[in-house]
Image 1 (cartoon, rainbow, N blue to C red):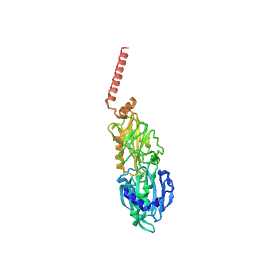
Image 2 (tube, helix red, strand yellow):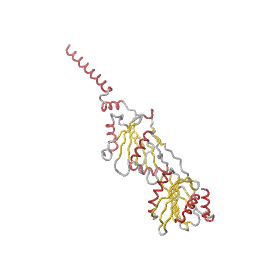
Image 3 (tube, helix red, strand yellow):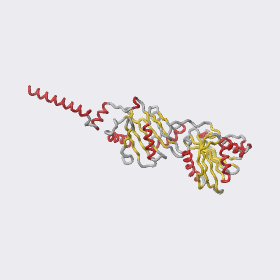
Image 4 (cartoon, helix red, strand yellow):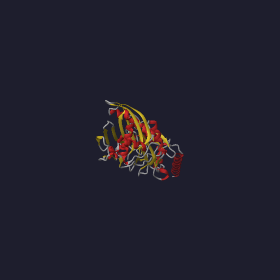
Amino acid sequence: MRALLLAALLCLSPAALAADEPYVMGDLNASLVLPKGWEQLKWSDWELQAKSKDGMLFHLFKSDYQPDLTEANVAAHAEAYLVPLADQGFSEPTTTNASLTEIAGRPAGFVRTAVSIPKVGRGTAVTAIFAGKGITLHARVIAVAGQASKAEATLTAMLGLLQLSAEPSPTTNVVTSPSGLGATLPAGWRAPLPEELEAAQKVTALIGQPQVDLEKCWLGVRPPASGEADLLLTCKGGAAPGPIDSHSFAGVEEELHTRFFGKLTEAVPRGTPLELTDRQGVVFAVKGGKNPIRLLVLPYENNIATTWALSNHLSEEALDADLKAVASAMTFPGENKGAPRFGAGNWLDYYLAYRPLHPYVLVPGALILAAVAALVMKLRRVAQTG
């Protein structure tokens, strides 16, 4: 890679690298001094476009979310580039390479796309994908097909000149909130970085929460190559309706359905049970619409935790599998891992409503009947002797 960078610098020539005022892009935490022979076409806090004397085009831009660079992620980016390139007038875009590499000392994804350049003919677009602080950075060079090697060398040289004022942040798949709720998220999911919260809350707005209270809730995202992220949102959800098991499920499910969805029985069918080792919850599947949405309700202590899961990319089956994995890896505040606990009144209601033939009901009932019978007999004897 060092040899490629050296070749690229020689290609541009020492004179071309003479110092000049840098183009500073605040949203990218980046600055770049264009080599001589390059003309700035567009410049803002979030992008830079330039053109060389021999017609090559350079574009530096960003997308939301810091990337986890994997082969699958790079391939997804390559696919996501096709429509925007066509919209920009580079017709018939076709991916010819998508791979992991290192460019100018940075881990990067590399994408080569064959295009048709207006009034010129066949061309090539080479794009580097790399991590910024809470964002994905994209650097692209477009050239005629005969300059394919020079386009790659130029891309490497540009990234060698690029200065980042903030490095990528460490990420974690462990999420927590001051409420005591937390979880270890499955593969592909992680806690959003502070720089990503604004983008994540665009998704939470779809479930009626444009502003998330991070004192009561935790957020999990599955960052995309393009578009909105998949989302998990768990919050403290109020008082528990009572013990949940196979006996009480129908009644508790009906109460929760009314609490969260009112009369939307067609859009939200009856919930289904989710059995965990230490508790049982209810899962509601919202039907229709563009995005699969789930609501999981789990009891802990005398409260409930509500977990909304929304997919912008995952299939319904994959979303269900990830939601189940999250449920099994949740942590709750309180003793005994937040085991559900209820008062005497809750248990009395439970047994009277759902298990009237249980000994807890029959034995006290029999004792009461016996006491009543004894009292009646005594009253009769008193009446007879009087």
